[in-house]
Image 1 (cartoon, rainbow, N blue to C red):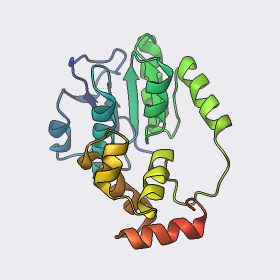
Image 2: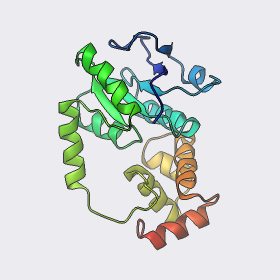
Image 3: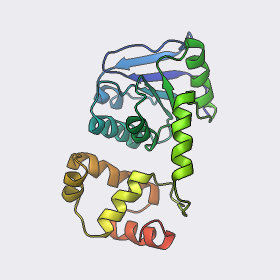
Length: 205
């Protein structure tokens, strides 16, 4: 894993998280396009979802993941409401720290995530364990997330991206980003191939 050399922070209130070690290059912005326009990838992306709607949270996470699939994303948030937390941890984040954590804990988490760890606040870890224990065990060789499998299932049943966007109250752009990520993970470039691989793997029916 790479050393901790640079950190991107996406935060609507442009708040710098406490505990970032000295000497680390930081880019702090409220606009996701500013981060996507950077020429060099960071060691870690810190995502502050507070003050964002659920749809925008998910859309921005997907944009970051598509642009930099090998960069770990650490959520830094005051959100503790179960449904909001579960929606975030179902995405491709690598850690979730609450803003009430100490600066020392935050600095440790940055180093941990760069070394392949998955730092979570205790309260978030409780919700994560609940999600894991309640999830049925299935083969998933493509490491698709729950919402990605759900989108693929809907597409296999003949629903269009527009249909899915209306059903889940998401923008068509957000659903399109979901589909692109599914294709990338499955190493395919069209829906027929994705559905075929999904059926063979048993992740859709």
